[in-house]
Length: 190
Image (tube, rainbow, N blue to C red; front, side):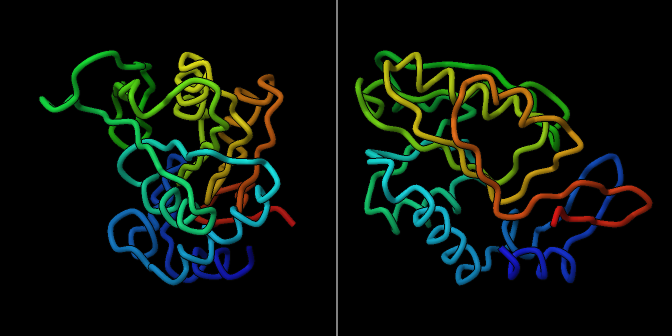
């Protein structure tokens, strides 16, 4: 998505060690128009997948997931990292490392919001190491649902996350694919 790439180049910051700061677009301040168009783009790609609901991880995955959910007119479920007192009954739980927090985080979804036999689209902000996406796929499978695909706003190819989740045989799309962040630059695939 060229508009997204242009905005990442003009406003994103390469902080080194593979960290891309796009706080003015998605991870702190949200450009609602841009993210709405991202959600519409994802919805267009998956329009024939018969999506019943969308699954993401809190916090930064919520906005692109919600934008996609609005475009598809389906519910959005986000995996919580901390169990609130209002979450009781059966849950699906997986653990994944957080690249920006530098530690493992739990991802929990209440079973009441993942009924079996649903077609689930996973939407997240980044595909980097792939471990968060893998945890979300495991939640979908644990719920006895069908994962119809994975959509990410930004993919950092050099971190190898796609390779980690490709074996699931799912369609994986990214709206902006970064192949390198060497020497302080941000380089996209063609």
